Image (cartoon, rainbow, N blue to C red):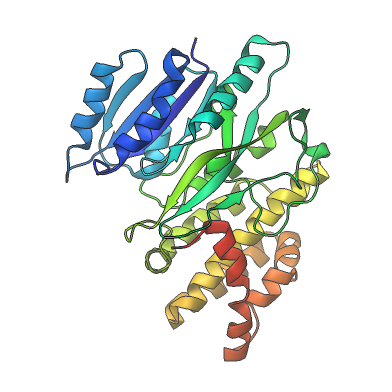
Length: 339
């Protein structure tokens, strides 16, 4: 039995995917590494995936598909996953060896012990190119550590302190049974990956180790600020999807309701900030429209988001108001780690 299935979405990733895969191989036979070649055409990503499958049979598996985007690569990984737990590691990222061993030990205890969990949370490190000090996202102030807990046990998540794709390992069956599927040909679906399953998550465990290393620095990276502005429609699409999955105002657990509402707040902030930073009237109209649609579709949620601190700062009139709005950009930076 595999403890952990790890999906690696790869699209023309030959220059860096080796580093990612090699960091995961020490998991040995307890891990399956699903290398998803998402229609790469510009390099030998496909050949590298096949080579690892040949060299590490039973551990590495090459999956080849037509290009469907990051979300469809994650979907393919999940469809092929046989491990009890499921993790996504992007092809330009990697994991820390010592923390990896602790993660596997923790999962092993739950798989073979009396209790089980729906989600394991770990820290991640922003491996920003050129940065002397690596910023660590941890959750010590927000959730209990080294014990099984529920949403009711959660504390206060500070602004910018969100559980991201890099932080989570889900129970595979939870994802499959919750009809989880990411949209094709869409960027920024990692937000859906951590948001959509949350109401199905009951038992969690926080392991306070710096496991995931999140590389930031490539000019073509999706979190490059100018690229995000160029793909503003993608950001709006993801945010609209997230707004439509649940009526968060009706979620019974107060802590979960607060957390998911806060997540939607930061997504609306990102949409607004990108429109403001773009400086175009076309994008400002998109910003106006998404707020108007939210007001029409869910007035209660609109009031919560619009009249919160971030919502107010995103909607102040005139050039002066827009300057104040940029202050919210710092929280957005903390959330995404813009290049």
